[in-house]
Image (cartoon, rainbow, N blue to C red):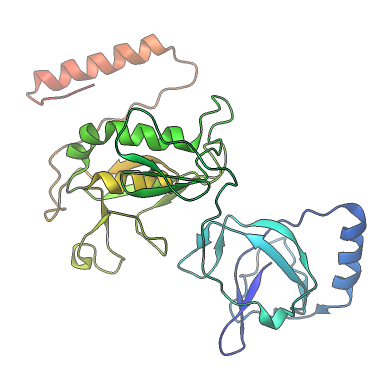
Length: 282
């Protein structure tokens, strides 16, 4: 479990991270931990008790270094990665730090075939005015596609995709660890600002942060920079979000069905929709 000190001196629970150490350092850590046992949690916002699971509480004196994607609205780290133990600073010096981009060490050449791409700082490429970091990171272990491939794809389809995204709130599926890692949905901007994104008035979705709309090329590239692999747009356009102007029929086949059977099912669905006067597309 991770914690950070608040300004008033209290300790906030900030998530969990898997500690990966070799046998000797791990044994040393266990010895230190054994001397720090306590009966109650040190956090003012501890995790709730779970059935058939016991927590071992320690005095907050051990310091670790962890990289992570961002701070969540609840004050926890998203997708943390353990980097090592720290003996050079006291636990009381650990506070919430500002998130910064970590760039790759080598610069990338300017993208060919587009006037919207230009080289940026070391490890970055600028496309449609958006800085793309970690562009060479593999996002699909099977095809070996890289993050820059996703960015360039969004860049190429922008003029065709934007008319179908315009004025429609979107839900995003992000894959910060690649498409085979953990995926999560996001409906609001949270703490990471998305370049070019449109934020709808909060009155349109009372009790929640502003809904997001992808109206500009820059926003689409910004989503690729944030590892967004799916965009699910609403079936209504703002400001009248209570009255959809379209519907999407999503066919989820059994894995045992052949592709041809799916093609036949989609074609038959279109025929039925055409017969009742609904214009449809496959």
